[in-house]
Amino acid sequence: MPVDKVIITREGFLRLIDKLNHLYHVVRPQVIEELQEARAFGVNVHNLQYINARERQLMLQRKIHELESKIEKSEVLVGSTFYCKRVFIGTVVEIENVETGERTTYCLVGPYESDVSNGKLASDSPVGRALLGKFEGEEVFVETPAGIRHYKICSINVPDTSCPNEC
Image 1 (tube, rainbow, N blue to C red):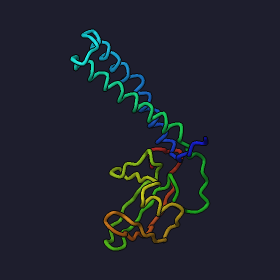
Image 2: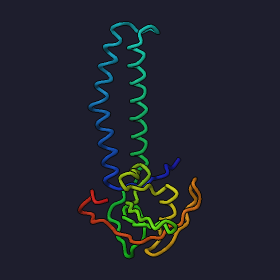
Image 3: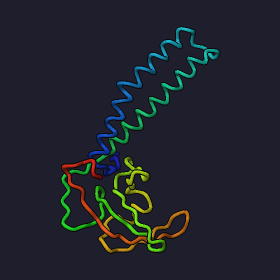
Image 4: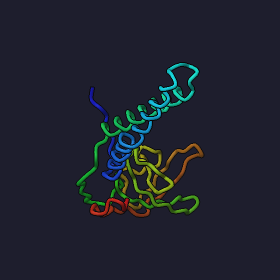
C-alpha cells in the first residue's frame, strides 16, 4: 500500500532526525536503566517504581514509533525553482486581515514543523490551505471556528536556500 507523502522543509526534516537521535541515544538509555533498577525490587503489581518505569518505556516506544513514521512519510522539499512569487511550502508570506488591518508574517511549512508562535504556519491548517498556490495581491477567505476571516496577501518572499534558518 503506498504511503501518502508529506512535504517538509530540510530544516524540519533534520529537526525530526535530531529528536529521534536524542530519544535513541539519551532518553532510551536512561529509561532502560530506570527499568533495570526497578526490576531489582521485583516485577509485581505492588512495585510502583517498576510500573512507572514500564509506563515510561512504553511512552518512549510510542514517541519513537511516531517519529519514525513521520520521517518515513516525509518528502523533503529541495531545489525548488520559483519562477513567480507564489505561496508554497518554504515561502515567507505576509498577510493582512482585511477587517482589522492587522499584518502577520508566516513561513509556510509542512504539518510536522508547525509552530505558529514562531511564525511557522502548517500547510494543512485552514489558513495554510487557503494560501497555497496564491499570488501576491490575492485575497482569500478562511473558515475558522471564530467565523470567516478575510485576508489579503501583501508579500511573498522565497528565503535564500543557503540560509535554512531564515524560514
